Image (cartoon, rainbow, N blue to C red; front, side, top):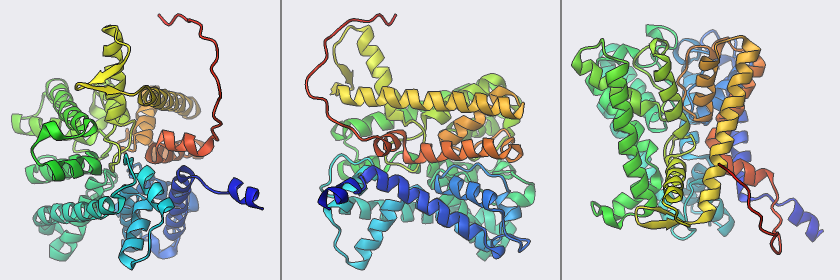
Amino acid sequence: MKKLTRDWRLSTFQIIIYSFAAGILLGALLLCLPFATRDGCGASFFDALFTSVSATCVTGLVVRDTWQYWSLFGRCIILALIQIGGLGIITVTLLIFIVSGKRVSLVQRLIMKDAISADKVGGILRLTSFIFRFTFITELLGAVLLWPTFSHRYGKTGGFGYALFHSVSAFCNAGFDLEGDFGAFSSLCPYQDNMAVNVIIICLIVFGGLGFLTWKDIQEKKWHFRNYSLQSKAILLATVILIILPALFFYFSEYTDLPIRARIISSLFQSVTTRTAGFNTRDLTMLSENGKIVMMILMLIGGAPGSTAGGMKVTTILVLLATSVSTFKDREETTMLRRTVSNDVVKKAASLFMMYAFLFLASGMFISYMEKKEVLDCLFETASAIGTVGLSMGITPTLSAPSKIILMFLMYFGRVGGLTVIFAAVTFNPVHGKYPVEEISVG
């Protein structure tokens, strides 16, 4: 009996993926209720499931316009799913334990550690408390700053509701919007020249995408950058680079017909939102092929580990780049910012890159074949799904059920994380001893 109990015990990674699956299913069932839609007829289970997956996985790809199709109740459910998905279901559950005064077991602390990519179990409860304080203060501040703009159109009460929805959606890098009264799937295009909305949304997206561990480092060590952990340093430097360089690209190649002020803000917004936020202020179908490819690369890179963002994560790309540089310099070890990166981390980064690249390409090509659509547009959708971004060429609502199922899988995979899925699915048996070494040419 003891052996049977051990065999059925779930690992921390399995608990994480099952908790997300349970949250998605519950959200889909609630969205199927008659009063969740404006017409009072209720959504089909498939549309409800797709919306629940997209909201819980903080993606933003939709088959129904959020404002035009869902009722106030339905939009509240979507907002709750975005919040829970952005923080992580495990994190929310742990907070309930803390608030209720219940004892948090070591197993629960271990699960939380894996869920937010923390490096140790010690101090995990303080970190959880910090995550919630930081999240709610930032989202509330964002809502208050957006309130004046939205209140002009929707009144004070309605305006605050709209401001809060977009603030949560931006911080959680979800990309859901309520601007359907301007036209279906309009996103933030009605505010493309509104400086306040653009700047506030940009800040919320960046704050959510930096990761809670990075913000904890900033809180504890203030402006002493040299004392930050290697991960925090790498994330902050990469974030600056991945905002500036793509913004320059969009400025000089995509938005040349706009006035200088609009050109600058549109370029910055596009650079930031592409890395998993999902809002857009300009018509994406007007982008050049080079612009679409740059956006796909940014979507696949994503944000930071332990953040509300998805994608491969900036640290994965940085480790691979550092490994390449070390190889070119004929160094045995990978170094980054005067620190040595372990071989285990290098192998994980390479594995993640291969998984994301394969799923992105294979899924896009399969959808293109199935739907008889341009392969670049289909690849854009799959990059958006697996990177949990939500930007679209407008083809997602027109796809068949098999293609939408593929997008749902990619969103789920991108949110829970590639390594989490692998560790949850595979039982690792330690290998004793070593195999003989033999060389193989790779170039």
